[in-house]
Image (cartoon, rainbow, N blue to C red; front, side, top):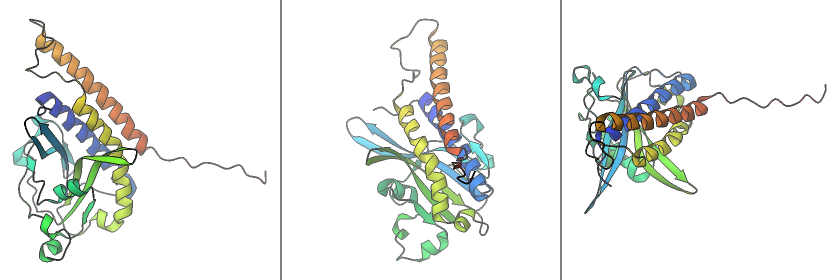
Length: 258
């Protein structure tokens, strides 16, 4: 498996951006959440298998204070958002801990964690460092949720959604509680995961792929094929997320007294 080319990376970033849109809408509806003073990163596990196997965590689409970045031409370091595909440590990071264990990370107070050597996550946390986002204030709380694909009783972890609160007080996750937030987030992530698998394996033609080249039409034809694949996948992904977000209609039982 070679490293992803530019076209595939762009498609994955866009899928993850649509996930962030759905998360924003669902959290707002379910728990009265506001994206102000929050950073939400989608971080993807990437593997390269050649002579040796390598695994990386890399940043993808990101929401910063309500603004979602999922295309490279939108990135603006002056506004706090740098580039995609930055490496996040698998070791000594809460995202790495979530990937390695499959456990949800829930830390309402990062300051307390850094002072408590008996805290189970003490040795897995590293102080805030710039990766691709530069907020006005450093995070005070952090929550990490696994993106999974489940087949029968087995599951694979494809990445994580990392949510960081950058302002003390007004933390809707803390006020709502673990179970309600988890149900809201995981229901969307479990729909999202299979689309990342498809995005990794679907045929995407890169600039150095000359297998079906036709002189004079190469760039135009490749762009048409890639656009069709991208649009079809994004449309199916959107419909799947929307289905999860639809209100559940309660069954109306017949009135036996009528």
